[in-house]
Amino acid sequence: MLPFTRDQFLGVFAEYNYHAAVWPAQFVAYALGLAMILLLFRRTPAARRAISGGLALMWLWTGIAYHWLHFAAINPVAIGFGLLFVAQGMAFLQAAVSGRGPGYAPVQGVSGLLGWTLVGYAVLVYPLVGDWSGHRSPAVPVFGITPCALTLSTLGLLLLTVTRAPRQSLVVPVAWSLIGGSASLVLGMGQDRPLLASGIAAVAVLLMRNRARSHALAAA
Image (cartoon, rainbow, N blue to C red; front, side, top):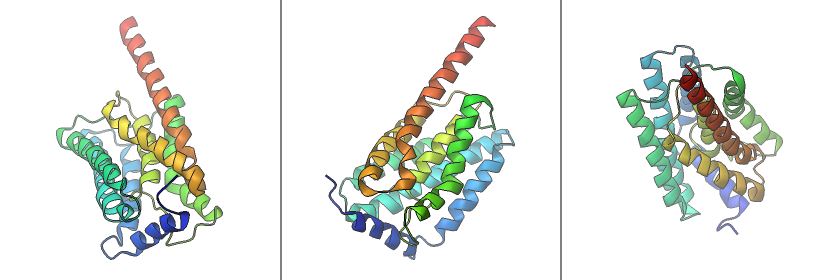
């Protein structure tokens, strides 16, 4: 049982999207997301830092502005959720500053296919599914500044890497894929339902990819 109703949950999004301190973060998040996608094709140390920095900003913002300042009003557990999101944001920030984050690139194969699918869904399809599910602005989750679409896009970007993705960078996204995906079934959030499968699929693909690369290096 959730400590809030579906109407209360959607009401948080409505208040969040209209809040003076948030507007126009919605458009900034989309612009940042598109810039990060373009940077995938650069494959330079600066591009690597910029993508990790962009993810850091999104996770920190969502943890503080969404979880702590809005969602916590109807769900006290959101304080803990916010801590997880801030920790994830700090991990990406450290990767951006140190330059030791994963090497993002438009890879091919299963990893690339799943990665592009998740990123494309989060940026383009997610709001359309929400609209088809009957969710109308402003009571809608938005890419980059709300948890579920951010988790989907982050998992996608971690799959679009040419280096081993740090395991710690997967913990919170995978955890939220289970939390948000399960809640979507109760709350009728059709756009969030791919979360449950996405976290499991991303981990499975990354583990298989890492194993294949280790075998290739051992054979060489």
